Length: 220
Image 1 (cartoon, rainbow, N blue to C red):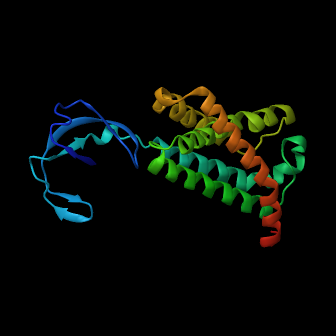
Image 2 (tube, rainbow, N blue to C red; image 1 turned 120 degrees about the vertical axis):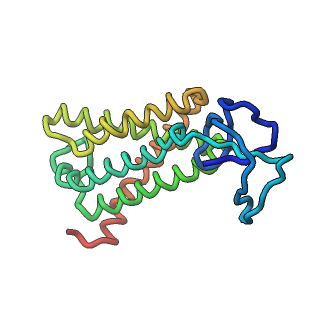
């Protein structure tokens, strides 16, 4: 992993290097050298007087955005397997859904999570709307582990599918991303606005997605 930059911009190893795009955030320089690099689609050797390649330690590259996607996916798989059957007993905590209805909806929601994460990784460092929609998505999935999953499990005295993956995976990784990795960037009222926007959009889309899944997929 490397970053081409203007010579003399970062002279000392250990300096913090801000950058945009995929793997957005900050990295620490562990060394610098002029090397042959693939630059703008063509293999060229940047002039030594202008460019340096900043070499970054692999151990310091944070991949928690992708880790959260894995957690999110496992959570949705757990729900996809057991939640339709559980929904018969869920009462006010979840509408009763058949396999075809729920599986279609959860696939769309999962795809949305992947698309939003990709857009954040590309544009989140420069676009505040994208950044706070992503943070709102993370916060929604963290709170989702508490309500309805944990509360439904306690009140109904019957395990709600998604509780374990929500509490053990989504909650800690999501909270780390919001308040750990990006904590110094978070403005609380913007985070709340992002959360409310994502939560309202998700809740508004769920029932139409259930109906669409019922129409498009044969019940099984």
